[in-house]
Length: 339
Ligand code: ATP
Ligand code: MG
Image (cartoon, rainbow, N blue to C red; front, top):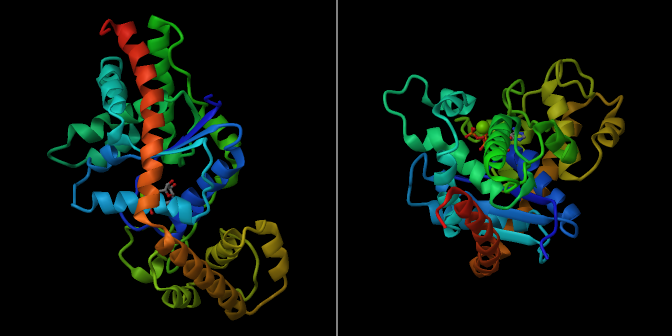
């Protein structure tokens, strides 16, 4: 029997990810899934249709399999309530997207900040980037998903999803379950509220995979001892005091944050351990060791996961996803007169 609420995530993984992506998004999702999989359905899908909005670089299949392995290597426990699937293997996503396109308006899609950001100054803008929030609404509404752990940049799209569902329900009855409001989402996942790993060279900025400087970021594919060296050469400050103060000492604070998250310790405990210490080198040494150990273990786990394991999970996950999604789609099709 389907459990409720459904928790759904579809992180786009078009390339190798950074330690920031891992600690800020992937690991919190895995912890959330492990915590709730006996009381909720956990849908983890690869948004491959969203991925082709940018460019199809021929690597999509490899990225897709690797991205699912990341979840497993991060400790995702597979239970009968955890479902892995590829968006494009569940055609109901595209079908519902079309129907919701007939519910959404140009005006509201034009107001999406992400669309404005990504299209501004361009001569030619793809329809895909304009319409992507409607596909995202379909991803959510097909499964009656309540919680969708996303970054703040996606809150506007959650609000849009709620609006489209409400508009449809008003006309046809209670067909869609509205996802929780962004405020409720944040409360639910309190675990990743506010995690923002900093750029190692410019700690005022966040660590980003698109930053060109390799020393600014730790990629999950970095050679572990090379990653440790990046920590040793991280920018700090000249105050000579180890304390958590993101405003005045973002470099040191970032190291304390990384240390806490990698060892699954409360940040406060790590701050207390280092309180009163003055040697930045000692802290760097400790964090460098944590990063190196983490990468060694993570990379070993990743290498041990056979592609076959992922494909087996996809096979059962996609049967489940198609069953749930087709049922909802059928209801919707009846409402609008297609069935
Ligand atoms: P890009 O430079 O291409 O924007 P990115 O590193 O910012 O890449 P995204 O693909 O934009 O990564 O985001 C993927 C997920 O990782 C999002 O949920 C985002 O909130 C989270 N994330 C990105 N950077 C960090 C960071 N430095 N700390 C914590 N979470 C992060
Ligand atoms: Mg980003």
